[in-house]
Image 1 (cartoon, rainbow, N blue to C red):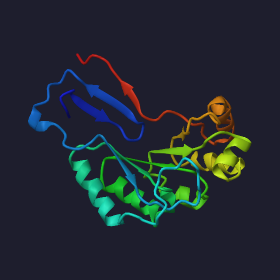
Image 2 (cartoon, rainbow, N blue to C red; image 1 turned 90 degrees about the horizontal axis):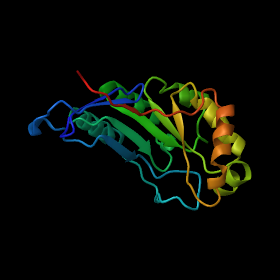
Image 3 (spheres, helix red, strand yellow; image 1 turned 45 degrees about the horizontal axis):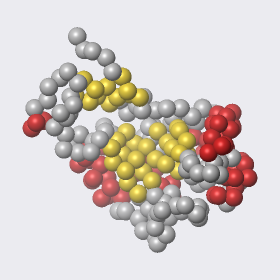
Image 4 (spheres, helix red, strand yellow; image 1 turned 120 degrees about the vertical axis):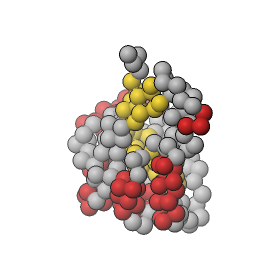
Length: 208
């Protein structure tokens, strides 16, 4: 709740509904941000030239992250998004996602390069993750030059994500990649078990 009205959110579908005709007293305003972004670890086996994440080894304490999530949920936060580094390199990452989904009403999301995904890792937090962002910059040789990994492997990652949760593409736009965006969407849509889609959506209408 805020000066804008009452904000309703469904973490499974990503639907947002703002009841802006409902007055909210100042003392009822939510004290938390709508969304929390957490860099769980700096660990990442890729060395992308434009990455801004620190390269020294570091990781957050799991119990502290869970406590933050519970506190922010009680204060009105709607979702937590994990990044890094590479969040799937974080020890007991799937268990952390499950614990937060069970302990809070927040959406659990994460951004990944996809190269650490396995059927076992994807299956473990299946009911606990609500949206995933797959980082892909360019297609074919462009991707392989920037990421130093086979493009076919990231297409396979998109295929693995299909049963886990809705997912979208997180892309760095530069002179190398801007002309390949349409081709990127086509290739991943063709290769994925479930095509990339928009998760969070908004509805606006008058409440009678």
